[in-house]
Amino acid sequence: MNKTYPLTAAQNMHYRWIKEYKTQQVSGLSIVAAFHMDVSISTLKKCIELEKQRYSCLRLRFTKPDENGEIQQYIADYEPEDLEEVDLTGMSLQEADDIMQNWAYQTFDGDDIPMCEFKIVKLPDGYTGFFVHMDHRLNDSVGIAVMATDIMNLYKHFQLGAEYPAPLADFEKVLVSDLEKASNEKRLARAKHFWDEQLDELGEPLYSDIQGKSVLEEARKKHNDPNLRAADIERKELFVAVKDYQLEVDSMQRAINFCLYNQISPTNLILLVIRTYLSKMNDGQEDITVENFISRRSTQDEMTSGGSRVLCFPCRTVISGDTTFIDAARKIQNHQNRVYMYSGYDPEFIRDEMKKRYNTPDDTTYVSVYLTYQPPMNTSDLDPDAKKLRTHIKWFANGAATKKMYLTVSHLPNRKLNFSYHYQTAQLTEKDAELMYYYMMRILFRGIEDPGRTIDEIINMI
Amino acid sequence: MDEKFEQKFKEVVARYCSVKAEDIKNDMSFRDDLGLSSLDLMTFLGDLEDEFDVEFNFGEDESKLSRVSTVESAMELLQEYME
Image (tube, rainbow over all chains, first blue to last red; front, side, top):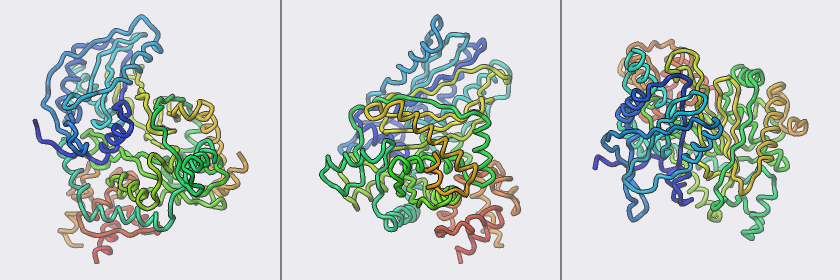
């Protein structure tokens, strides 16, 4: 076996979910990237095989758990394979998507096995490309985009005579650097100090639910504790449904202009909107926590090394109703800046500390909404013919959510802003997603049209 | 400014951008010239803490953070914390 390494904090986050929810399905990550052109399948296969050699995170495997349930990772040697070709022509694109969606529900069960699988797909309406399904511990959405771009650059080289793409950064080198940083005692102490200080100052967080106060009240009854500040996590019924809403280009641009003018990042603006929505649904509650996913890619090497680099940290906001929208945005931004500074910290340490301090029951949480904001990407790099080409690129949900409501906000190639609500059907319905989007947009536009309005004023207006 | 300090500082900056350490000028802006986002900038500050064994304690004082706009102003801020 090649050299083994412990998991990074980001990988451990997924591994913890696998253990807690007892299925690898919660760690599935799948995408199809297909092009409306005459694709040379033999060349595409060759490029994918080359990619497995260039992008070594795709070859990660995990050892059998030890007596403490801990696993190690290693980069397996490259093994050539003849990729499966699946013909999904002769049906509608929607039917083909439904078939691929089912592939995305498949699990990688076993130790020391490949955790990534490619298929060549021929789709209806003249699209041809590849479907890839992998474990999230190998890579994340940004890393998948890097991979897809590199495959297409290789394709352009072999098929169209373009320059051979530059090598990608060494995954193993970045992994070693991450593990070294994570074990730097001074860095750990500084991060712990930051998070502990917040709890010292603000005390125990308070749960806020998309559906209002009744959820916390139910948890208080169930645990026979009228002062309980956390609510139960759904552990059994993990099925997730997805509802997407798209914000028109003009409206999106107004929001982005607000961000540019006020130097507020879009993530922080969305966090403010979500927490204001939760405040509205929970009778003006001021102490609201939302979990925010951060993709830790800052150095040049980290940009192209691959690997799962996403961590989620609590964004705790204690904002009184008389705070103006812009001041609230700045307050969140200041806090998030510090979170970014210590973003190598394992968020599990924060949860452990809260558990220790407040002795919350098992399987409870302070958070009902999780956010990922994906900044705009240059999708033209994915175009293998260097022309405006129709593409069919689709991310597939793994079908098993560890979170009650997981919102992904991303920029579409048509410049609309997509709000993708992934919600546990055991608890929520499409109506909850619809209401959330409706009120979020009202809060957003009442806030940005007059940032001097207070949070209370905005809640009363909507 | 001490030459070794400046060189070491710019080597850390170079990890975050496509400009070589020796080509980084003191008046370059982290955002406009070197392309760092706010997340990159904060991660960079975390690296500076490790490399120079300091602790930036900005607290709620945003004005200190806003000084980290150019290479030179960031070096000056770092030196203050090192003293």
